[in-house]
Length: 214
Image (tube, rainbow, N blue to C red; front, side, top):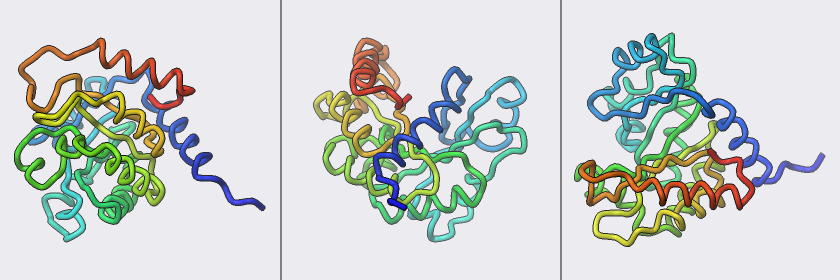
């Protein structure tokens, strides 16, 4: 029996996650706010897909009790994702395995967080500065993860050129099962209107490439 190709596995992961996210009410991960009791309430009021607070993969793998607690899933969360921050394939795969063991449905890699606590470590939106390196990272994590891997991005890193269309294209090629675009640059934080036109262009690019990735 011939072994399955990586491309076949990637397409199946895209299809699986797409079917679970499309048309659903999704609660985005909220640092310092999206804890289990809050998500449980949101699920009671109609949230169909929920994500936990961002977890630093390195601390998680070291056994940090706070990061471990962020893996927990409320009993009424229908579809639950664990969001991680890492720039290392081995860390990402290890965190994904712990997320799977804890009952998560998928893992989301945060490449959009603009806060200093993340960017000073080369995490979050800082990773958008090197699209080729980011593509290699996602390819490695997606290949080793027991769960589908999605990625959250912004339009650009702080002080960087707007490169989201290139980034999203590379993430698709790397096997990302889905991409979430925060329509602002890291520098803009939350102060300016989102660029919905650029988000639409990324969606069009994905459709022209064959679709499948929500």
